[in-house]
Image 1 (cartoon, rainbow, N blue to C red):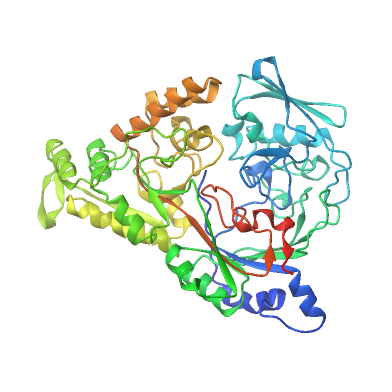
Image 2: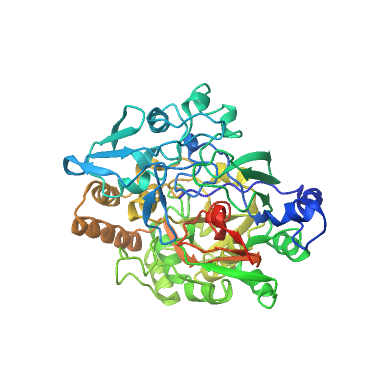
Amino acid sequence: MTTRRIRSAAAAAAFAAGVTACSAPGGGTGDGDAEAAESVVIGVGSEPDTLSPLLGYGKDGNSKIFDGLLARDTDLKLKPALATALPKIADGGRTYTYTLRDGVKFSDGEPLTAQDVVYTYRTILDAKTNSTARSELDAIEGVRANGDDTVVFTLKYPYAPFAARTVLPIVPEHVAGEQDPNTGDFNTKPVGTGPYVLTNWSKGEKLAFKANPHYWGGKPAVKSFTMAVIADDNVRATRLRSGDLDGAVLPPNLAATFEKDDGRRTYEAKSYDFRAVTLPTAGKVTGDRAIRQALDAAVDRQAMVDKILDGAGRPAYGPLPADDPWYARGIERPHDLAKAERILDEAGWKQGSGGVRAKDGQRASFTLYYPSGDKVRQDHALAYASDAKKAGIEVKVEGATWEVIEPRMKSDAVMAGFGSVGDPDFGLYTLLHSSLAGDGFNNMAHYDDPAVDEALDAGRRSQDPEVRGAAYEKIQKALVENPGYTFLTHIDHLYVLADRWDGLTTQLEPHEHGFASGPWWNIEDWQPKK
């Protein structure tokens, strides 16, 4: 659920020549043409901080370097991966047993064993490991190996979505176990069981991969691919149009410019990805609940969907989209400027100079940061500031790198992106639980509501759908009365790719997309068009 840090792509121009040589999507002759036909170059907006699952990489699946015990199909249904079957569940949902697939090897040729699975989970659960995934594995009491091919998890409490947590990638103990998980070179030189191996990582520029000769799932037709890291949306579109890229993730307005291009195809993925403004309780202005409530009423969500997303999205009234089965009906709020003004009047925020309200000498003014180069977030931020101004709240919009934004997240507002698929616990717990305030990108707003914490714990620990449903309904309604974020839109993800491969599909996607999620989530299954 956390927001990925966008790295600088200042060297993108220098990288262009290398990409053209690698991909040559426009064609060519001789041996290079055959090589190019088996390679793909994708333009993405960001890169991960690490490639180690021990620190959180690939925790939701779709890593091309690693595999989990389980994986997800196109419809997000769980299926066996390193395990031979879905787990055997016993002891009232407290014991999960997996049997490993025979003959699986890591990319260095060494065999996968149950001890590698045990090492992976134990290391993530170790408090000394700086893992973003630890809170998501809270239910695990212990994990042990029975021989070389059986792994048994024991849970502290029945955790309904536990099997979905075992898409977590498995790492080799014989490599990673010899290093410090926080600083070792496994973070940038990973060894896994997945269909591809990393051949080069030029930070801020590209990550290059080739087919893993030891892959248990067969030889992919795409022999190599490159992820070109291009933070700026416009530059990504330009590079795609010029032929430097075979495909790219693009915002709606730029994807629309390729609609009449016969050589390319646009793919649209529905998602749980939402844009929201964090409203830190430590902020002098955002810490006032009346300000947060007024902003919730003043914002025009539908206008953002229509004008910023060109209709490729939906209004967000909370962290779950309206078509999610756990969505709390009746929490929809219309754009209501009069209500926003009434809330502020009653709370003592009176009109002041320049149309900006003030209370006890404090102007209703705060800064809202967005990551530079992200046009969609910039447009959301500017629209948000415009709506807030009409209610008498001054929102000063600034673009910056994540290196600049991160130290300010506790007290300044951020145009953030979140959203997880699979189970409401996956996204809501890290977004809202007070115990995770300030834990990296978890609970960026430092939200602290005891009733919400209690409901989050109830939803996580119960297997009864009615109990869980009541808990998540309570949470969503609490966010209306005591908002820690202004939820704006749920965004459809758009991708444009050269139309030369078969087998491309999209899944229902989380916030994290582009690098792992996208039509390339199953790139190992693509086949060249006849």
